[in-house]
Image 1 (cartoon, rainbow, N blue to C red):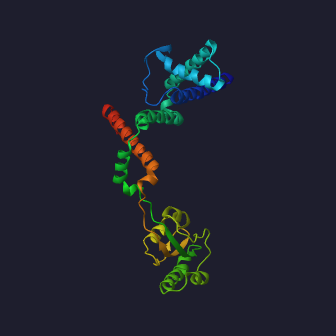
Image 2 (cartoon, rainbow, N blue to C red):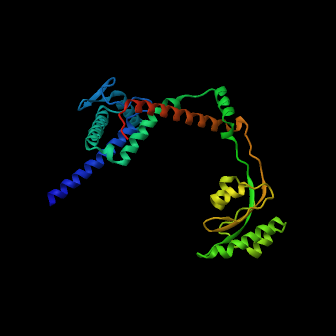
Image 3 (cartoon, rainbow, N blue to C red):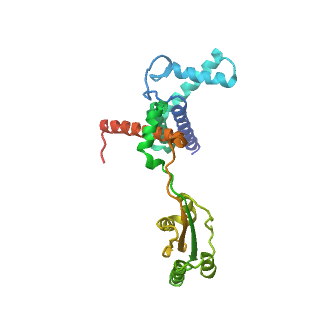
Length: 291
């Protein structure tokens, strides 16, 4: 039994070490834009079971060590770095032998992340000129349009218990009628409504912020109102909302100069998405996929 326990513990440690090695390989040894293929690529400083450890990778790690220590690496330090790289390669190979790339979610996530970084690296390095960015901004004006802000108030009616709707809904309908007749919202709220857990601020808010106070159902109903409009009672998970649109500001298209950085980032994101989609389409065309 003791031997079995020691064997299980050794297997676990080996698996953990393999996962660590594969993660280190994915993030420490792969430069964005370089091929991820293993093999004899360019000059090598060692091979491990026929897999090359490239001189460029070794040199980058040594240079990083020199920056950290602020001294020139000795031959002994270079050897230690190489020994570490050999250990990592052994762990990577063992991890693949154990099938961790198939069964360990962290390892798979690291590999996927490294591949995506590699595929999109060329796009990240591309800097579009000003005319190209301005043209992109004009084509995507709807994306850069800033939603108008709204000022909304409500009378809230909390539903308690399974039979609460029958009692509460008539009160909510009465509140809507009185508001449409011109009665002040504050007096209707004080006489008929319940306290709100998170009262809506008396200020103009973007729709996404209003969503935090009302939830999706009531927010959709509020955004359908014109200025001065009052909603029918809206049922949410906690009760009924009678909403009044106090004021609303129209959506605004910003000028290019105020969103130039955002336009550049969005351009790069979309270019990266296209590059990744094209790469995946090529992989799919070469793969045997059975659904």
